[in-house]
Length: 232
Image 1: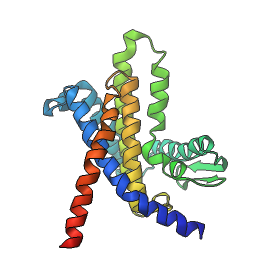
Image 2: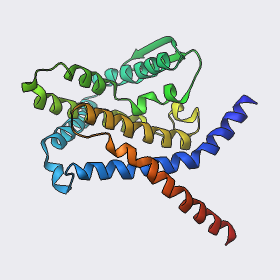
Image 3: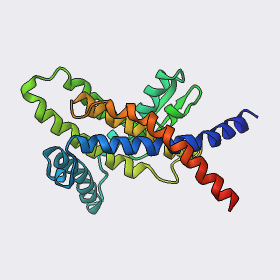
């Protein structure tokens, strides 16, 4: 019975989460444009370092596969994946009981209980990037530019891990339903990116205040659209 109630609740929340995701994506994009984002931004040093982090992981893994070797950086990916489960589990009162990570066999963490934040943590929480952000708070001002370059390279590496792990066969994504998990990850990932950019002084939080108004305007429009569809 509790599982059926949880399933019903997730399906009931899904329309709201979809509206929230659309509103957040729209306002986040507007905020980036307000910061001067344009097609020319693809040549910005931070964008190039992001691409370098992603490109390095792709080429490094491809080169090792060509020689029949394992990618040693995949162990760090596995460790990050399992640690995010564990850390968010601690923060949400579902502490880990065991954790394993290995290069060839992958990893596993057993939590005492479960919740969506802990189950989906590896897909919205770039742990190495957040550690870099925390260290960056005490970095000397003269090193801030170089630190931002390193941070965006780590974000590129996180995208590589996300592309490898976010797939239909990933059991984490089916614990609460694939669609519910995907929308939730999208929302939480936007918040995490906003946190990172805000911490480095690259984006303010003002965009988030416009999300509530966006949702209020979207709800009547969505209701009217659904009513017309049912009446047709």
